[in-house]
Image (cartoon, rainbow, N blue to C red; front, side):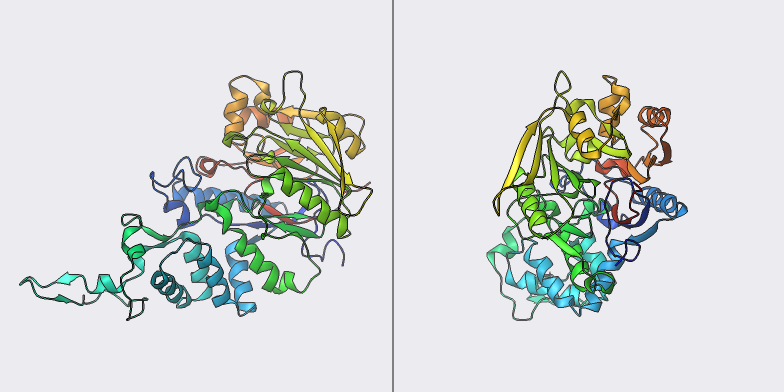
Length: 444
């Protein structure tokens, strides 16, 4: 199978982008409230109408440059139907949704299975509000004005709960004022994190925070059931059934032999070593992983929020990840001399490590915000370093990061800017919002 027909083929960060997976923001971002923002990993509430307009602009910019755009919500529904897996998928989602009451579990299952598959997928992504699922108690809660027995409400809709439902303490004691039976998934438009392509395969990730862990269920279903992927030889280098954590924003494909992976707030050193062993034992082309340790803070949650590749010999970088003197911990992981073992070499010179694996004599690290004490952290907060390369020396960025964008242009990079007033509220940039599926291989 050639690179142009393989459903997943990514051997670099900068090869011409041919196919990408996106998720258009939906009501899940509007289902945020100030009380639950932190729980769902948001710092603000995007305006749905504008964030959708901005995301559509992003998708059009990709399509205008010859990229095939696929959507997560559509692929997931197609996969579930193709695999006749509707009930199986719902049961998996419910099992990871912290539903303690058996009656609520059954009611939600009935509610979701009663929908068309596409509507069901969207409902799961948006979150299921209690008011949308009628309970028996709601039906019988009206009391006659004369003090008589409760009577059934009229015109209140069908109950999805069994008629023999009995009251459970968990039904009435857990967050009575909390509006959701199933939490929304507002981070889904960052398709990079739940799964990440590398070579002719991918990782399907167990994510760090509970708010995001269900997201990779959609990619798991797509890989298992969708005809575009399930009938091809797609390698699952690492599945979501691990106790250690990894997220796609930390996974960078430098070339067909080398990965860079961040040891970060959301990807553990243990997970990186486990992935290395899988790659080395399953016959992948990858021979080295540069594990780069970045600060464990929200502003720098993934490696790609502080470091991305934009050309053969050029990278964006946030100066805040470097120690005084410019050093940073880099652990080079290679296959060990014995089966099941790896060899680890510690370096502190990132630039030298990159030159060695890329085979270049000169390397340019372009500082976010020009390295200015105010502009650099401001633009990094708005993902000035989080560029999406769609070809060597061609990147998509947020328009708000004007200092970083101008500096990229001064270094010969073509910059395609997209609007970002609402997209940026989720703390992720164009690379975060995209999961490349196919890139052309680089020449030479």
